[in-house]
Length: 329
Ligand code: GDP
Image 1: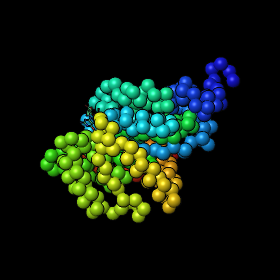
Image 2 (image 1 turned 30 degrees about the vertical axis):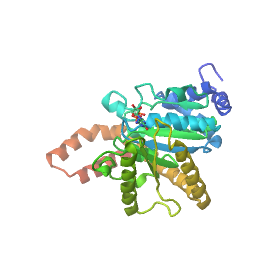
Image 3 (image 1 turned 60 degrees about the vertical axis):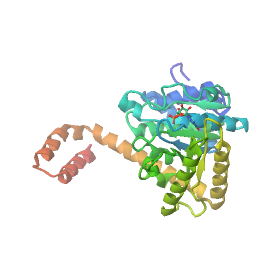
Image 4 (image 1 turned 90 degrees about the vertical axis):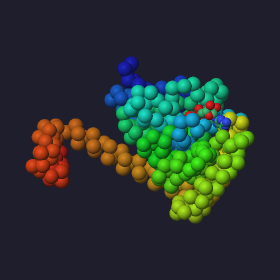
């Protein structure tokens, strides 16, 4: 290879051997917006694909302050002590909107960060959730190829990020608090439907009783929902991440889930469905970009948009015209 070209073979080899530097370099390529880097990243992903898929992918969500990083710190260390290699990734598109990231700024998971069998990567930057999600998915594949057999994907309950993370993991769990008063206020519509488990954190000491109460309420609420699988009833667990209580039970639960759904074939089916959904998301995203970048479309867009605003044409007729222009491009 010439000096300018990148040796992705070597990078892939180093990565699959489990070295940290090639993994970091590969992730940098994935996250880069430079077209050359993107080409290398695509080539690299093809090369490492046979080595991917061997992890259990766990999504962890909850509002800021619920205890996500405290939980991941305890959970991650439990797993590395058991001999697992743990990667922690994050999906946080809020950094682009607010200028400051909800997940990434403070020093988090200090002990886990020092653990040589753990790899922590903050949320990639990106202006859209779709962009951030793509980078995170691809980083997940790199981590799997590098031998990480548990991947934790953390997110906050901002916009669609929970749905997006649920669509890339095997198991999605929601950390909750037992608030006084209206317990179920804390849970957004639609999020309960995608949870594979609810974990009520900070359930120690005086909080324990409130947490037990909340547990009952969540279980009642879950009862009303149509179960996603006849082989899995969404459990509601109590934990105290800070005092390391109930954390091992969460891992037992994940193993139980994996065992049952592997036996029924649903585990593999879910991944296949996710892959197809991802394909379509990518097609739609790329199509949208191509449309917006089309010179024919760009030339006529202000005029057509103006006509819609003025009411001289309908959005439906305008979109047909734009699509005709796009097809000719
Ligand atoms: P995150 O924003 O969801 O990542 O939450 P953090 O892990 O940063 O936790 C927020 C605060 O709650 C910190 O002060 C933690 O020490 C505290 N915390 C986390 N888990 C527990 C717990 O189980 N019990 C108690 N009492 N405090 C906790």
